[in-house]
Length: 85
Picture 1 (tube, helix red, strand yellow):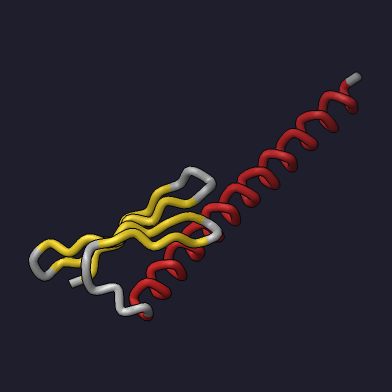
Picture 2 (tube, helix red, strand yellow):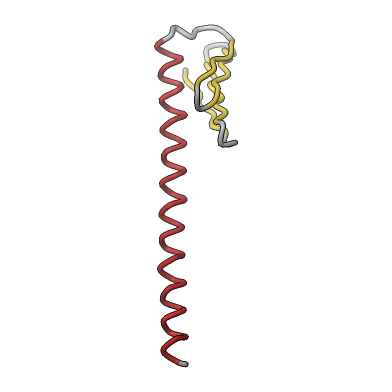
């Protein structure tokens, strides 16, 4: 009984660590996708306001004064906002 309890707790701990690592990898992947989409919009000479569509989501570009705002909305539901001067 005691051994199964210890094994269960150890298994729960290991699974928790694995899930945390998986979540972090997904978050890093989504951020990298968002940053890549912004770079692609910049390379397309995206200087004015507009929306750019990609397979993984879209980038809404808006220029306010000398600040360029990039709002990336991924199909996964996550949103990232980048500002460049």
